[in-house]
Length: 274
Image (cartoon, rainbow, N blue to C red):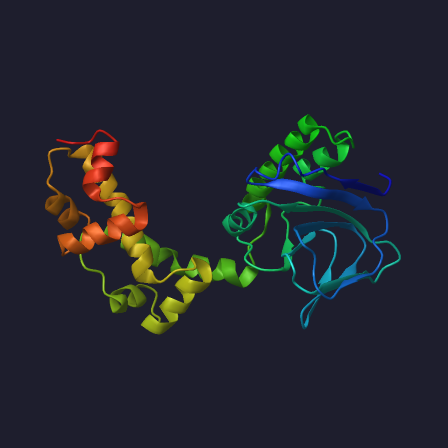
């Protein structure tokens, strides 16, 4: 593949939740420095060779199998450190761009590791599309951009230490699932894996990005929805109790915080009244 740079016309598609702004491939990526960053999100996939990436005061080595993400207006620089450094990239934006990256586990500028060394399929298809800027072509690029974001969650390898930590708390998650109907003190959860409550909270934050009580409440709300479906004659206080909430008012407050509506509204919306 020869070096390619595609500038996408965005005027007609800026209302879309996600769209590509530039797409490209370099046979040899030159050195580039951006003290004020770039206006769009960017994702670069390293295909051959080795380079160095600088983000703020941190330096990373990136090689085949690596991708690196750059958030808008974050200072960065990158340069080759091998004879050839082949990269493919896409710049993108839209009101859902940041949320889709978060869904894939990407919360800030930096590198990631892919499970496969080959060029990501949606990115390859974007490069193979017509270089024209008709509305139809740009709409197709937006579809492929969305597919790329969804694929990333499965394609990105979890950091080794993060994966180990997730494995470590799996018995805790199973214990929660089996005991949602009753009070679950933090001390009890920590004893399941023989660690301190404070360390368990840190593990939850690092792996699930939320506190244990937040995770438990979300699981209880899911359980309450199942109870509403399987027991339509049940009263709200009965559902709250069977889902593990000691206080009906607290159950209703958590339900609205998680779902955006009261339990009664949820039941009505889904036709679950007794």
